[in-house]
Length: 189
Image (cartoon, rainbow, N blue to C red; front, side, top):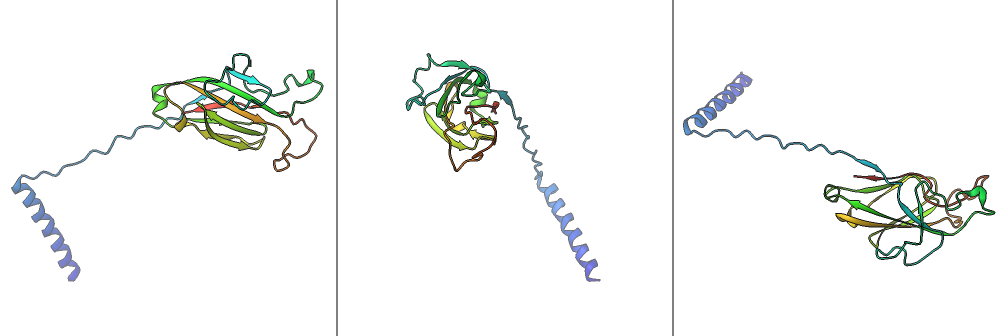
């Protein structure tokens, strides 16, 4: 009996509420859900039009640094390519630089650089600011470059070091330990 009374009270409450709304002219506002904007991931091959020098230069990260005498290369690239023509493998530091454009849409998005492989340590700079470091020659990784880019022309500089490091695998093996950005790079928006 109590359940029946509770149900009747709820029904009467609903009827009274509807009557009040109708008599006062108050209309219930039905809100439309916010439109969902599709988040689209765009991936652009970033392998063309790099500059390279096989030496360490402490100023190469700076935006206004002149790389006009550097080699023009495309990725994937190896410090010792063509390795079969050299008497030994180069061990040390090499620098890569790339000038690239960021559109207005990209400048309003999250932008990352996806490296599929660098042997073995990279320090990445965008527009003269250090973005980060990655160690490990056989793992892919990403750098979020959003805070460092702007609409228009941007300068990327990458210091790559293949000097033997006992903390990084592989420490030995029957293969060549050359250096460089030896796998693809993609710009992710």
